[in-house]
Length: 461
Image (tube, rainbow, N blue to C red):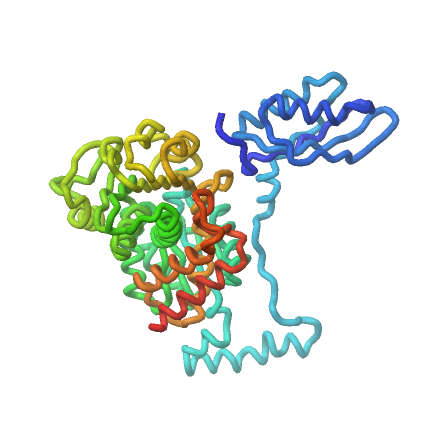
């Protein structure tokens, strides 16, 4: 059974007999079903019985049903309701708009709206650059998706992508103080997406492309960067690459190795894999092998897009060929941004001593973390329930904060390398160990450090 997770948290409201051991029996039922009890609250107590909310984590929806069934089988217990806490959190959406100015009387209204607002409109018409100073533009990002590559769920459409985009907007605000808004587009046409974003850009200070399938995402990003004078950032590519490099920087500090001495195997050469490989190369990693579902990318294959062609022409210096499991034999670092359960612990055992494994497929990684940890020196995943969570939230709030503060739109390797270094340096030397190579996403120092580093790099400092 997979590990339990807060993502599958339920609250079971039950009617139980008024006995001394009733709550203990409820707790035992959860544990016997493999759940993780997180709260047990008596919400009502009467002579003939008690009402108890039993809150616990499960591993998936079926496991949640098994737990509630185990509770229902207790003598004298009646299950009144089972609530999925994740769905409850999403009811009505996760973000809202709040005014920043008082609107208490007619004087306020006259300045915030008509007639006073007309003077501000005319000022911007005369000098369009004033929009950044006099509107929300300087602190607002559009989170744009077409719903074609949502998490590990694939092409589920724009409406189904909304919960992720709302979550992204909430993270922007909480961690970076950036106001972000979901923009979900009911089209997969590259030309239409580019034109729509170009048309809405005057109202935003930045564009965060999200969950758009490759290779379309590359062209969309490239064209928008050419058209717009605000930063355009594809988080699935560059945010992932920044955090991976930060984690790898600290992992190398733990094992005492240098980039130029390592063989790195990257599984997945889509948006994330391509960006990771390019950023690692910029940081001095010279021996990288990119693998797709067939194994090492073959430069002799015809019909590759320009991005896969770059990988074929600029990696794998020894020209190795074969499936992924063969490529990691003798490797020092494995980075997976692909699909679950591609490798076993025995495969990891064939890597060099002191191996580093980043298995980042979500929710199920490329190799079981516990099996990998039997042979690797350091293991990281994209999940919150294992040590060393490699999470994009470490990068994008602070990255956009820095770009918006700099008032520039050129996202360069220098800005991304600066962000990665800032994240890595948030883990002090005395804290660094195999189970702590990246800071917590809740570390209040991360976003300001990234913002400062990016702002300085963007301004050439």
